Image 1 (cartoon, chains in turn green, purple):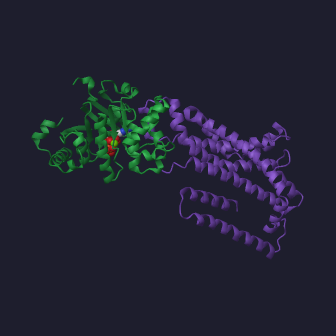
Image 2 (cartoon, each protein chain N blue to C red):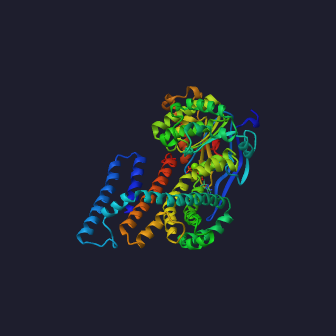
Image 3 (cartoon, chains in turn blue, green):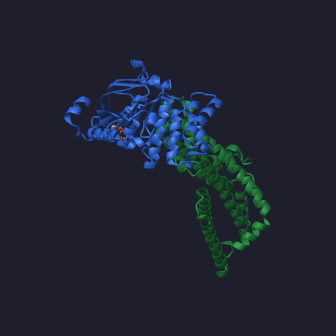
Length: 270
Length: 272
Ligand SMILES: Nc1ncnc2c1ncn2[C@@H]1O[C@H](COP(=O)(O)OP(=O)(O)OP(=O)(O)O)[C@@H](O)[C@H]1O
Ligand SMILES: [Mg+2]
């Protein structure tokens, strides 16, 4: 696979925030490559720079040093070319717009004709199972439903890259697992690469092809765990009970708590 | 009495808005209090044989209200028209000024002391000056007084509203590479709308009060303010109070109308 087809390439990226109390190193010399169609989760304790890394990829912020390529372009160009869809921990729907109008928002900003917008919104409503709520307003939806709308909005322009910052963070466990199943299905159906930030080890393991473990002060990647849990189509709730799942969970936990055997660490630590 | 009724109206509307079960209670309690107060007033006036120039009995005022209903109504229309014109002009000026200030930090900083000064000036005190500027035969001075008193609360609330855009919405618009004009019309202005209407609700009472008091200082006859002064000057105290009652109803009408508008425009804002 040539470099140009990678969804994301982060090379030697650092981000230092100048604060009143002096510089804060949010990210220090981070390297990360996400292949096209690959699902990668970022996990680590609060403040280790997960959101910062995602914002750099999305060109919502600029690195202090290092380079980033998004689908073979600079992050700014990628943003202007609408190469990615994005969802945050807060659904961030516009409360004065209906559910359908919220999903249409990115299409409307980019001048897609009304008919085409309608059709795409209907398609996505079907995908997230909220067709009956097209004309409702966000305040009439539960938190989980709002989050599904936010994900539909992120998918509106059929991006080949999805950036998600703890999109299920505010959901209860039951809704959360259902949303995870849906996300695996959606990612498989659309063939999009996903960079997914989470605090939950099982969530990261269940969703991802690879889990990237980070540590704070300064924010660094301390390990990468491959989760071979089968193709996305076969990854159902049953996977959550398999041995491979628990092995991967244990591996991520070891990296997070720094109790990994030295040999393994030597291989996977940067 | 005005404030009790106003609070009651606000509670009633809010309760309806939230569809809470305590609706009838919230409406009945203030009405009950009003009835009790009116009864005590009537009883007190009769018991102590209070002269009408001190305070007339509610029954006497009610009689005058019924007898003079057409003039009270026409007076309300005259004063209400001035107040409404002032409210609309002041609202437009206030919103436009807030838009300019929110776009330019320099202008905002320049405007801040002026606005602070304006907010403590008793605007009606300008009425006599404005009458000499625009002539005492026209309603212009009254409309201007009402407009001036409206500008400040609308300006301040709108400006606050324009700064309420959520970081997540700002990030989203940046991710979409949306043009500034698009961001303004799609996110910034809709975010500010509830604040504009809060400003309007606060300003609505000010507009009525200002338009009414401005009549005390001159100008054409026909409005409620002029009627109150002439009835009082003619020692017709119950009639003067009847016009005061008309003013209260007018003020409440403005308040409830703007409150209803506010509730309508914020009906989906309960959660984000
Ligand atoms: N705009 C900013 N200005 C100053 N410091 C910042 C800024 N944004 C982030 N930081 C700092 O950078 C570090 C990483 O923040 P970041 O939000 O990326 O963490 P995170 O891994 O997403 O944490 P969480 O899991 O709590 O969301 C933190 O120490 C934070 O205080
Ligand atoms: Mg974060």
